[in-house]
Image (cartoon, rainbow, N blue to C red):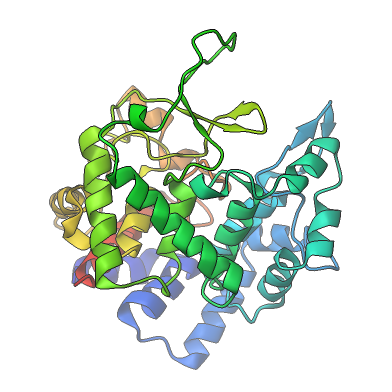
Length: 373
């Protein structure tokens, strides 16, 4: 292990990183230390803000990857008021399932009457709830979001519906292995008068995206050597056949939706000199969480690059001086939205805080890969 990196984190990181480092990697967290660190986490600004959005029925926030503005009316005081962002914060902070916020949120996401009420505050959400299973096979539905957030909260293996969704996620990766190009499963309407007239898949087509990756990353029931090997092969195949500029829609109820992070482009390996997108380290982490290890070429290449990028003091540094890197710098992250990477440090005024986030990511990533068979 990277002892200098770990020493740096234990000395300089905030409570979330120290909690996760000791609980998940070092595995040396005593009951009293865990209680102490959790109380420090509960006192962090974002966690305290989240408390304002917890409803009596257990649901947190309003909607799930939903409108924050509807016809001029501001619906969210902050991004954290969205249900998905709330779930991501609880997940990234590793708040225990026994905590009232997590327990209540999970219960609300599994109660049809509660969900129907929660998704009725504006007309589009009523329709969205009525069509909540449409697009499930490619992770592009409201239920895919609700299932994935439950998994991220640590409850993805204890409910029949979520076990079924795990199988759907696996089918998406099996499906992509069967094609030689995206054209094999997409359709194209040359006469369509849309601003972005991309090829599209039908709503019942199976296809992987970031949410189906997350569902598998945060669950265990599906894990067999055969399934893990299949996932590694599928990721390698995606990188072999997809083009860097590919775009695709999914057609749901006659409407053409931009699929949320569908894996229609190659997955980029980590580089310290180029930040490809705001979420690319997160995706690499979640692929590593699936257990594919270095069988996935992008993980093997990323491991080599991470090791080279860690300096002699054990710190991971990125090159932020280039214009593209400034645009996608993790320094810009404020909330745990689906469009950002993972930030665990509360305050970036201390220059070491960002280095702690980056270095913890490196340690976690290398650890996850080292645990693969």
